[in-house]
Amino acid sequence: MAGKIDAVDLLAVENLEVVYNDVALTLKGLSLRAGQGGITALLGANGAGKSTTLKAISGLLAGEDGAVTDGRIVFDGAPINHLPPERIVRLGVFQVMEGRRVFEDMSVEDNLRCGGVTRPAGEFKTGVERVYDYFPRLKERRQQLAGYMSGGEQQMLAIGRALIAKPRLLLLDEPSLGLAPLLVEEIFDIIRRINRDDGVTILLVEQNARAALGIADVGFIMENGRIVLDGTSAELLGNPDVQEFYLGLSHGGEKRRYRDVKHYRRRKRWLG
Image 1 (cartoon, one colour):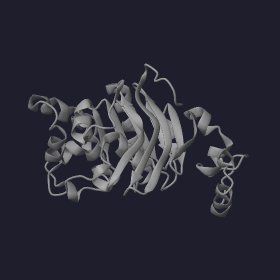
Image 2 (cartoon, helix red, strand yellow; image 1 turned 120 degrees about the horizontal axis):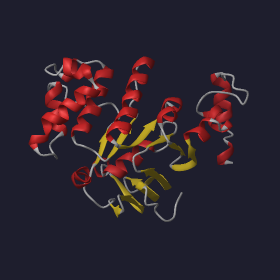
Image 3 (cartoon, one colour; image 1 turned 180 degrees about the horizontal axis):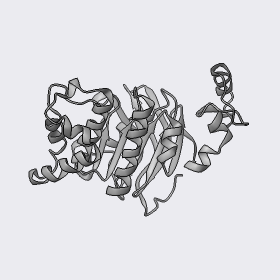
């Protein structure tokens, strides 16, 4: 996937290396792309480097003693890996962090107002009504303190706060984390609507490979700080290795026992 940037790529990450504390090499020549107006899934197990990738794109590494030491991140044709996070946000890149990170002691509507600090004040009314259209439950609870909301409602609020900023590129870090299956389905349906109706390009980091590939156009799979497999969602869903290692299925389509999956993980063919 490296090489010349395609005109339809809104984001291109090229041969990226990230080091923490001047010692720990976390990303090791990682390359991926996110097409304009599409949904791109970034999949992998815990510790693969998915969240680090998003933080590198949004400029948030410095707060954790991390730094990009090689490669580049190109957004809309221009390098951004040396820009501070506030500049990156103003360019239209907004990240929804893992764990939701809402302001618990503030109301739903005040949380949403915080998302609009980079936009003209006059846009807030229209923006918040758009958020309430996607998330009617937030409108019902708009004066409620965010800390008293359920995990699913807080995830809706975190995504809604990002939408107030009118992002061109929305980075979503594990939006299904800790949610019941029905809520996961609801959240992913809304993510698909946001992409389709508002044209927001989305880079989706997930461990729930089936849910992510169900809405994504293309996907990349990470292992140990590198991309080891990529393709369209249909190609990845049909790939026997992906079925075994990420969907828990054998080549015949049967569910694998946890012990079998753990054993097969040791012989991942693309890392041989």
